[in-house]
Length: 305
Image (tube, rainbow, N blue to C red; front, side, top):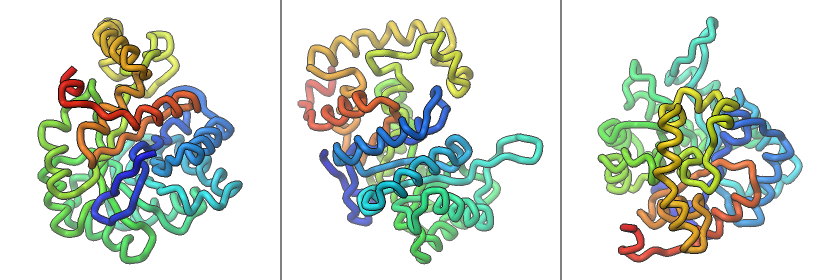
C-alpha cells in the first residue's frame, strides 16, 4: 500500500483509509464480526488510516474498533485512528452542533474510552457550530494537541475562508468533505485551499455512495437505508437516471481491468497527493479490489477520459 503524509506533521499514513461509518447500521445491517473482518483485512493490506465518529451508530462504530484493538493490542501501534465530535441531540431528540470547549472535551474523552486508546492521530470537529468563532474552536483543539490527547485536528465540511482563519491559529491537519467523480464541488476552492496550506483533504463517499461501483444501490436497497432516503440522488426518477449515467464509467473500469469502485479510488489518488479517500465497506473483497487499484497510475489523457 502506498502511503502519504498527513497534514504538516510528517506522519505517514496509508493512501487508502477505511470509513468506519459502515461499522454502524447507516448503510444497512452491520455487526462486530463484519467490522473486525474489515479491520483484520486492513492490517493484511497495510491500510492504517481508520476514520470513525462518535455519532456513527451512537458510539457503536468506535466500540467495535475498540473491541478489535483489545483483541489485537499490537494494532494500536499500527492504526492511525481519526474520530469526530460535535453532533449531538437535545432532550427532545433534535440534532444540533456543539463546538464549545466543555462539550468537545467530554466528547473526546468519551471517544478515547470507547476506542480504548489514550491518544488519537486526528480529531475533527464534525460540523461547525457557527455561534462560536472558529478561532475559539481552534484554540480548544490546539489545547488537545498540547495535552497529548490528539496529534492533529481537522474540520469536516468547512469553507475555504474559515479554514484559512483556523490555520492562522494552529496548522489544520486535515479537512474532510464528500468528493468523488460524481460530487465535484470541492474543486470550487476547497481542494486548492487545502493544498496551499499543506492540509490533507480526506474524501468521504469516494465511490459516490455506490453510484460509482459495479453494483449501485437499487430503489429497493435504498428503502433499507434511512440515511439515503432523503438524498435527491437516490430518489426516483433521479436514481435510475444516475445509474444509467454511470454505465460508461463501469464499462471503462472493466476495460482497464479494475472494478468501478477501484477506478473511482484510483482517480482520486491520481488527482493530487494530498487527497486521502476513505471508502466504507462491509466486504473484504471490495476492500481488496480498492486496495489493488491504489497502484494504478494514470496518464494525463487517461485522467481526462
